[in-house]
Length: 212
Image (cartoon, rainbow, N blue to C red; front, side, top):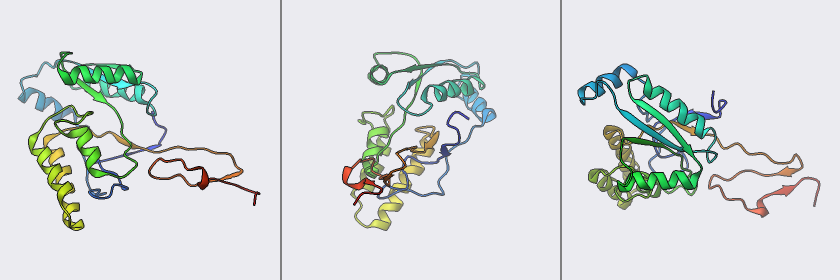
């Protein structure tokens, strides 16, 4: 496979280290070409259309190859998709151009996010809200749900509220969540080090074996 088994299928935007909202039972839509063709016909695009899939190149593991695979999968349902994989600065420029309406045509984008600090709100607003810098959509009802979950004080109620946000995102089909990629890290055999979930590298947490 493209990622060599170093990834898991995933069903939500929130991960296990977010402070609220993650539920391992959540699942996203799978690959269903027949259903996709039926939806295209229902929407008046039985003969398909042209679309550009933009992605980074060298920023995430297998990003270009994944972009090409996505374009190939979409072609199988009748959409003439092409992959445009660029270095991050050019990808960002393309993303901003489509978002601002300066670049026309149908497009989709493949990108990843880390959110190692565990803030549920920042990742949802950043990737999915009307004013999110990395959002490609605007659903006022989704913004309202995110804000309501953020403002909920009771932990159990907040968990349910953020799960409700995930359910609403699935209903609106805001994204196609592809995979959760594993962090693959390496160090010398003479070091003792446990990686942190917040992606921070602190020198005093790294020990050298055989030294007092």
